[in-house]
Length: 309
Image: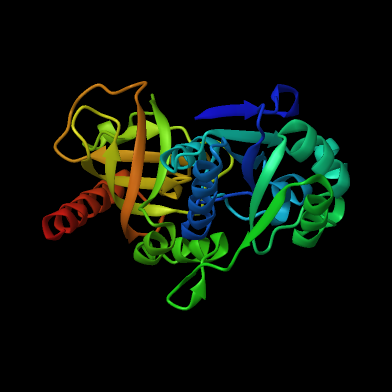
């Protein structure tokens, strides 16, 4: 899968392409239905498929304080898009210039001149352009004028309710991993590279792999039973702590994973951590002894989960 960063790297395919546009935060089942339709149309027309995404997400740029937690950062999003057979991802930097681009300019510069669009498939709530002035009807009118087809996808539902990134965030916030999995079509996961930490876990007898997450932060906090991928043996079971570590008055958001029955040097390795079950929320402890006792309890609960799985 090709990653195209920015308009300046865009080159229209000789015969055009089929495309979709959106935030694709989470790449959930509703998004996957769009991608499936896109791939089918690409195969029928023997055209490359392109997914247009934004980084940062528009709301993160326009209204940072009210922007929701991100389900998938760019690397995680690209991993899932690759699994769905997308040929190219056009990642547009959402900045003041893009925010000021009118719907007509977006269609002309990106879809027509940039991509040579032949077919466009969209979710049913898509808006674009300055002040969100463009919508499905705007694109359909442009398609009639310039010779490309526009199709919309109906709302995708699970258990009678619309699948949405908001609904997944709500499930994750309350620790309902089963609902999140049902809406995503897979386990919720976080990815990162193992770095050196402060060795507190090792001091307490539970050495952890520390993964740098950085911005934007995910919508999960607490202790989880996890499967870890990216090592020679996979998946490896573990207990993960996600958050700012209030137990030791921490401020930096971290993902720390204690791998069960594992003791190897894995610094620098890139891991994918799948969250299976929430054990408990974050908590503060008055002493390291109290924290050590709780960690032992969390590890025991994690082992019990895997024994019953």
